[in-house]
Image (cartoon, rainbow, N blue to C red; front, side):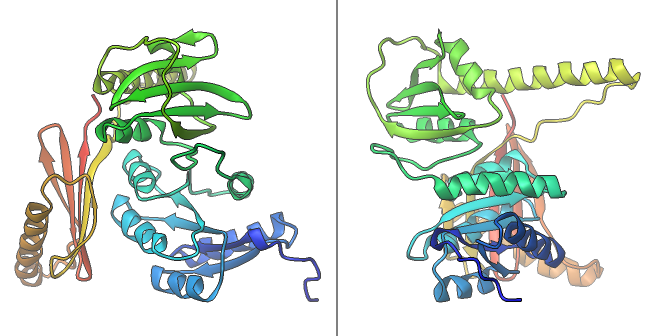
Amino acid sequence: MPNTKKIQPDRRILIVDDDHDDLATAGEAFRELSGERWEVRLATDVAEALAVLQANKVALVVLAVNTPVLDVALLLGSFGRQHPPFKKAVLAHPATDEVRAASLAAGADRFFEKPVSAEGLKSVFEKLCELLDWTSPPGLQGVLRSVGLADIVQMECLGRESSVIELFHEQPLGRIYIEDGLIIHAVCGEISGERAFQKLLALTGGTFELRDFELPPERTINRTWEFLLGEAQRLRELSGQRSKAGENLATGAKGVSSEPSGQAAEMLICSAAGEVLYNWQSPAPAARVALLRNVARQAEKLIPDLQLGKLDRVEIQMAGGRAILQPRADRMVFVRITNPA
């Protein structure tokens, strides 16, 4: 029986996922949850997605990332060149800090962990509805983000920007004031200063908006942004350890420590010929390209001789973090990840 319900113009979406089963499940779930008022198109790779975008006007692209950070920027960058513009959301598995940072840096408007249940799909659907309904208020410089506040603070400070980050969760929660790359004030309810900043950084939900800078009523923060974000990471780890200790007391299990994954500090993607396709905060693009091409050449020599298959990636331990290199035939990726402070 044909669908007699009218498709809403601002509810035409495209889902991109190379897992055919997950793609079909998400498409069917979103159609059903929308009461058949969403027009949902599906694609299994970026080429198919770009073909859909060229032939159809969509309001939202949902990109499911089933691999680590290395593909995110290239895919979002490809979508970002399309006109008219549309909103972008990333569903990631695994949903690591580096994938989140890369997604936000490359232009994602929302970032979620990829759902694995019907309830999870329903929760993501509701959040996508919020994203589709959201419009930029006057004076907004940035875009809506659902997670990754620490990443936005870091990028504003690294860029020596001046802005006000306002946080919401159905109602205003607080503000962070950044002037010339320095965090100078924060307020959360009746709390101000560093306590307010750390309370805002500890939030796990809500949205935040990047507004034009205005002078705060007072300056309450004098420490560097590096110290403040490092302290936020330390407090998160401490909170996690306390939660884990509570679970262990309840179950009688022994505690198991886990190393924090860190944050993406730079990313570069280039073609096999060495043409830079995407560059985010890389201090030495030419050196990164040369390193990638050298690794690719060495891989061609070693892998056929050893008959072990294809080289997926190379990880290099560096001072303060690690670098991940992925020399593919069509493109090569360099990502540097810093350890938490």
